[in-house]
Amino acid sequence: MHDTVWFEIQGLPAVTIASSEFHNAAVTQREALGMDGARFVLVDHPIQDANDDEMRAKAVAVYDKVVGALTD
Image (cartoon, rainbow, N blue to C red; front, side):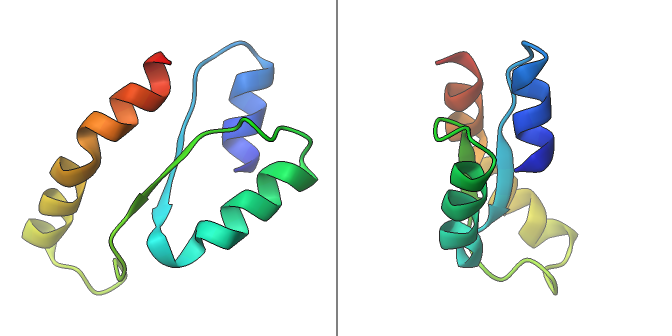
């Protein structure tokens, strides 16, 4: 969320992509950073042990959400 907030302050649209396990952390961080509207998209957990094909599938699954978050 720190990077997303930094880019947004610079006037550049940004979105954080994180594992669904980190939903509460993302909400807490954006509030603590003073940008309640900072956007994030969650991918299915887990990602740490996902192979390349699984990661591609996770990326495809959230692609439209990421584009939507960047173009709102």
